[in-house]
Image 1: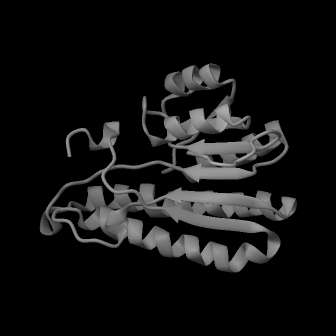
Image 2: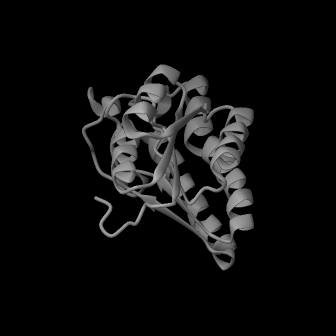
Length: 196
């Protein structure tokens, strides 16, 4: 999966590793196997603690819908480990609802989790990585940001928005050594898609 990635001495932060065997957990195991110090984050502290122990890493609580929680996660990770070389956001929430039936509450949650939270997350990372003059930000997006599926309007819209935001970060901060990219998988077997 990681090809020629040399993890020795690198600090990798992964948000969205709080569900067993989701993308965040799989990536955490791969980065740890490549020699990186991996810091996993999410809302389920018991799951995070178990994963951190398994891979010889660290964990920090983070709710991506809470600005203060995001700020604390990034600052704590940087303080404990001295830097953040790679940061990945693998959080997700599937919402299969017809366009006209999407509630205001569901729309707010989708935008908070899939756009506003990642926006704040990248702001905090840019602050840390600008001081380092290097860093890699990876946002796990979705093929649905570009293709059409029924009953996915809020999800597709949020993913398309975050894709454009990541391009903006890459454009504005590439000159200080920060790379920002999205990865857009298709339907992948994870706990989130189990009932899809």
